[in-house]
Image (cartoon, rainbow, N blue to C red; front, side):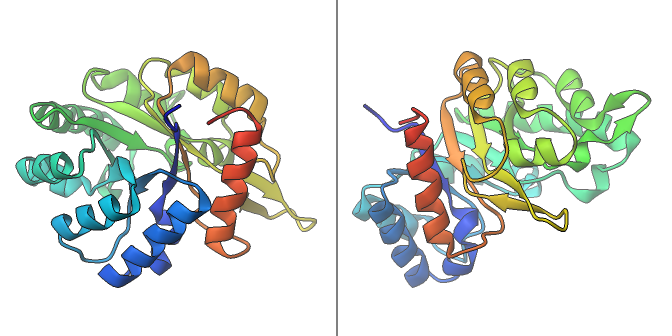
Length: 254
């Protein structure tokens, strides 16, 4: 059975600064048990060299995080690079800061739709990865509601991040349900709490998120890729990726 689980390379950004680093990190990721990665925050590397490294390790790319400016200004280059990598999904890691205001969410919904249309000409699917600032309310609606209600679902898909939805006071399972059919990519990381009330990013299954509800909603919503990411690890990031993979498989995702 083809794997549905991928490792988000942003987790390993401190280990992927040079081509040699990238090659070593990819080998370790494969050794942990991943067959698929999402590319993000890699150091400078020629796409052809990157493709050789991936092929050598038997890894495929399910998605990327690519800058919104590059998507907007160089769509042909983005399309060419993704086609070389055999990757269909091009997402942005966060909303550019100039859009993070009441008027900006409306404008971003329109701009993202246009970017999505351009990428679709080359067979790519545009995705938006949320943090928690999008759950700020403007006249009764969250920024995330504005973004998804005012953008075209044909051209703007979601990459829900479970931790950040919870961090913003939202319900990850409810948002997954709300975006059913529009959610090919899901970022999985857990939220733990310390005795001094600090929220910590944790490995999947090692914190307090309701994974039964999240995974049930994900299956119903048609999630294609379950992407494990941990921005901040409390231990070696490779070990964190291994723990999350093991726990997620134990929950029935393969």
